[in-house]
Length: 220
Image (cartoon, rainbow, N blue to C red):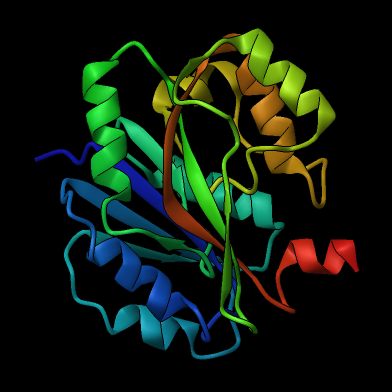
């Protein structure tokens, strides 16, 4: 059976977290998915940990050279065959019903193309999980509302709480390699030019904050 969802996991030297990230996918209550892992020439034990999983839904690719993070994400997307695409960074996590809730929303709203959930900002050192809701209420968020909010700040986040239809890539394009840090923000803005966003007002994903991730380095 062709997978409905492609979960794309870019990885580089995250042996500390990659196992937990994969486990959060394998614990999903919805099972019709594939996992595309693109390792960006890791020098730690990442590949050893990744290859320890024998699930046939997991497909592993290793780059011949280290490339930009967003180029690596785009490469993972290019390998995907699912109707819906998720980007799960190798230090972030899904709640067990993340895919189930989004597939339910898609089944009841098949015309929608961008699905967003609430997310925990999870501080790894203190184990503090702070809930974040990108929108105040659930349901369809018109393009104009999304653009107004995004012009103020990136209220969506890094995308752990987002699933896109393949049509989004065809119309808005992939992640831009012109930005070192904010390519996700740029993509949300481009998506909002074409699509309404559908918001599921439940906390279904965990964005892990720690001393090594990109947002921590930028803020510092």
